[in-house]
Length: 242
Ligand code: ADP
Ligand code: MG
Image 1 (cartoon, helix red, strand yellow):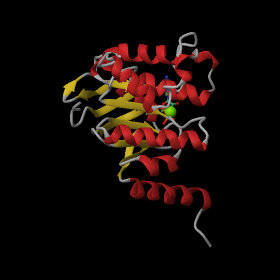
Image 2 (cartoon, helix red, strand yellow; image 1 turned 30 degrees about the vertical axis):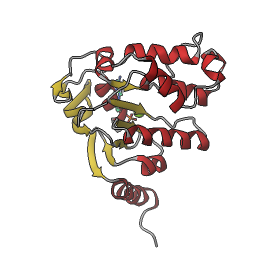
Image 3 (tube, helix red, strand yellow; image 1 turned 180 degrees about the vertical axis):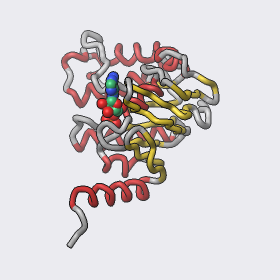
């Protein structure tokens, strides 16, 4: 399966809430086969950017492009159909459906509808055993997070958008998540993660964009951007060392 080289691009995105500018001319590319991370303090504008890319928020200025095509006016479900998948922090699984049925619903909303893709996705996320036939309502949060990810992946997306995928996971679950996300990128999927857990970003990301007050203030490989963030945070919180 081939992916557009740069499936998703944000150009000069601006979002205002009344007088307040939450996003101020943000440019961002989400390239195929790479894990791109957005980090920054609470209120920096990360989720606002995420919603503009997913299609759940229309920017006041700027545009979103899919493979060079302007999709700013495309609603979220049409973007999913093009191959822009996302996960939800408030899990978007149907409690009365089984795990496999939930993943099938995800496939129906996506780019490709294919039973083999559903089976591959269940296997990739370790959901191919007896758990596949359990109603989602009975499952622990860690498993539901995997179902949620499988639902997003079953339609064969070109791009996967994840807002804080590690929130509420224990260390073992984060390790599984990291392995799965790396495998997806190796397979050519473009990944964008918005994440508070800087250790995870350091382990996963090819490129990190640091946001503050609605702008991207630094971009580069994690070792470069995260060290600069560390230094800035240390200076603010600890002052100069004696
Ligand atoms: P982050 O995800 O980086 O924590 P957000 O994108 O959620 O930041 O929010 C950026 C800023 O925009 C914050 O100051 C937040 O209070 C503000 N904001 C977000 N959504 C709304 C809204 N619906 N109405 C007014 N202000 C908002
Ligand atoms: Mg947020």
